[in-house]
Image (tube, rainbow, N blue to C red; front, side, top):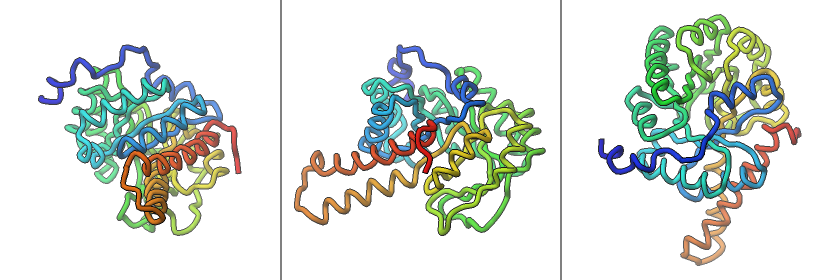
Length: 293
């Protein structure tokens, strides 16, 4: 593989990092969680890591298939790994919503600390089969695996459709697949909400009792801080943040460009990057139990 030949010597940092699966276990019974932030270019990557550095907080950096295709897998991975070292932050690189075994394999081969295999839209048995296959592969790399069970509306999908995670199915799924983390459907959706979401926290509590793995909340953008804190206390160990990062970066950049004729990207981008840092700093305080509004 071309990616392997070019970047093998750079794929893993010489620093010893706690495995993400171990970090998630450590947080399981604590009132704190890991914030998992998507990045889309150097500016958003720098913005989230500046926040983590300022807060002395661990962080998960996430890449989706579309971001990988936009930047190229070797470039996106190496940029993230180099930035982690530069900022001296405890951080992990994670594949978000991996939609195939092949993509998960490519990410593991190049050095990702964790991968998500999302077969949630397939049948329950198919989801188990695909997920178990990725779990077995990830063992060779000592990597973490996240899966999803239930319906969490993706961008462009109807948020009116329901398909909450059933505790009994979650227990079977975790036992049969051996995943380290499970994204659950309890009332969230990807993207912005038309109205404030009401999460089924009682369902979350029941899932937590029967699975005992790290539970993940997707669709974290726009959820009130108090609700996030309540979810963390009931077993959520990882909270995903993506839409708000894109939104604040683009809106801030538009505001800058609308009011001046500056064409030097090195002067206009930092303003938007700083806005990302402020947003993520606020979220990190929430997931670390330092701020509840």
